[in-house]
Length: 348
Image 1 (spheres, rainbow, N blue to C red):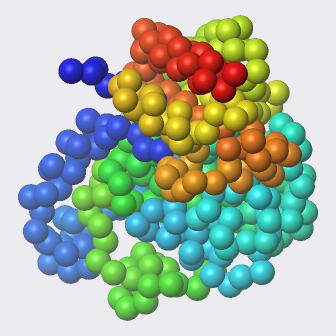
Image 2 (cartoon, one colour; image 1 turned 180 degrees about the vertical axis):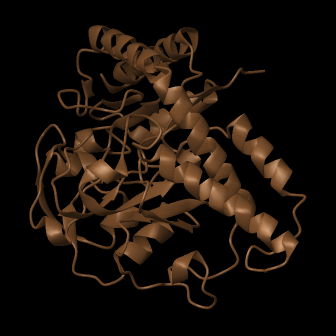
């Protein structure tokens, strides 16, 4: 039986034990958080505890934390009014709602336009490239950055931020829109007055408490320096690849990047093919954003960075976690380099 190695942490992070424990404890609560009796107040108290945990972890004290089903729904609320702009490297949850008119250079760095009606992701899900956010920015997608690098919403200089729980070890199906206090948005789900009138519907109690616990644990892990070790592993992996595969490019390598992300560009070797071949060898990786994987197309991120179709179609994302070992990443390097040699032999 093949021993599996998970190297797709940017798609979703494994559920943290702290989140699991918090959710299991919350399962015994019967009350609706909107009810005023003791049972309802107990459920409401857990939601507010989680809200405080997320706010503290995200450096958003004094901001409004509106819980949603994920960053995609948060984007739907943030950009409901329309007329927003940004760059072509945004995740589809944001990119489908804006005009991609901002310039992107070969390293993946964006030159912002009108920031008052613009959005700029803090870190890219495919390349891991980290942006410097301009003051006065309307919104930023901080989904990939939160939990991997130090982030403080109160210092980001933007009016809103989007975050997602499952990217840092909370369950899937929970996220939040973080807003400067007093910001007005148009609710997309109407009904009751939950979430300060910004998002109606009975709250996802289990997801919310899991998000709070995971956020708190992720920040403790970040403070401990665990991601510095991940960066060292990633750099050692890339050094080996670049030494043994002369035609491979690491997208965004000249820009600041998340410590765990490596985007390998192998012109002519389709990313989807690489994913399937590595899966058969026991390794979970992806050709790009999880929401775009499985669609036979070139990476829009690489296209925006100026890569041609042959290169943009031959990309593989490797994203490590704090529990990834040196043995695991080097075994992956062995398997990937061997498969690359076979591909080159067939193509010759």
